[in-house]
Length: 540
Image (tube, rainbow, N blue to C red):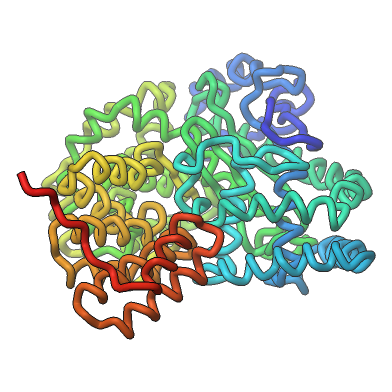
């Protein structure tokens, strides 16, 4: 697979070499789900099913990879205090951190570059280390390779969580040279190659087992890709998955302890892989899925992420995936009561269709048809009234486990950009609706959405509403443009309220934050010199 990353070590996953099939086509796996007739049918068809996914096939959509770009992003984070679970990480993480600091100490210029970068990093911390890791990985996946680390797309098309830290790419270019990152990367290439080798067979087995159970082929979606990036420089307790259009990414940091609960994070990788297989089916059968949209009302009380409460296709797909995971986890000896409890737990988190899909999969396992053929019938079989009645009796949990895969849909990623365009075109109502929707669905930079709402209030001559939202925007964002302009607008509002002392404080704050923004700097200096007066409309 062609990736946008330079200097990578990668390996396509071979699923169907004859020796591997003979080793993997185990009686215990197939017999758990299939009758004897179907067992024989699938055993004869396995090679045909998996043949397109051989190692030598350039069209293989499933790739294990490492990336010098992600390595640089993570090296920078580690250099600036990202220490999460360092003690349980692979010792190579500490070794690389020491090598980076040694290189930075070689000159005063290098130390200054490292210090400036870390000041920027400290000023853009998120709510917690896991959030920091997530947003920087999102950025890294959208950067071209060294030495410049330029975004591959326009800033408006970056994933929402990456946008607030987009300017970090400018820091990376200087850091990459000063810390001699490429030489460190080259020095440890064999370590990263060994990491890929460690994953090759477990991943191939996971893909094979899931494709056999679902009776569908992972290479069946032309143009779609599934890439697992491996690195040593992150928290081994974290796995991050992303869906950007037709591309699916998982970034994992394996634990060096083979006795830990999930050292390779294969369960998380499998969850993302099931999204890769099933999301296209939801898109293809959108009309059938839309029929069950009334069920969204039944999960309003659930502790789900808002995306599941507003998008029925996301909810349906997640319920089906959880049902598949419960049906296929464990062995033939796993007590049904354990699976039943897992279904109940999923329902309490808000995935109310998990019991329905669990039962539908029992029937599916006995049928030779693959999931592609059975999917629409499965969706059409949902009894809305029955599911609403069952959901009404659910005592939902207080919190739900976070969903692994972050879906970044183009319309979501452009929502705030379009809102700004509507505002510039004079459509304040349209801009307000989009900004409010972004807030409710937690799409993009929440401070940017609040800033748009404040601008709408200004357009509607609602000074108090504007003042409140500008103040909220400052608290909700790390984007210097939004913060600087919010302070500037607050200064003008306070001037119009004849509170000059408070206005001067806001102008000074705007000047401090927006010193590198010429328009802000000019407007703030003008505000310090004299009180703002709104322009007088010419008489007609």
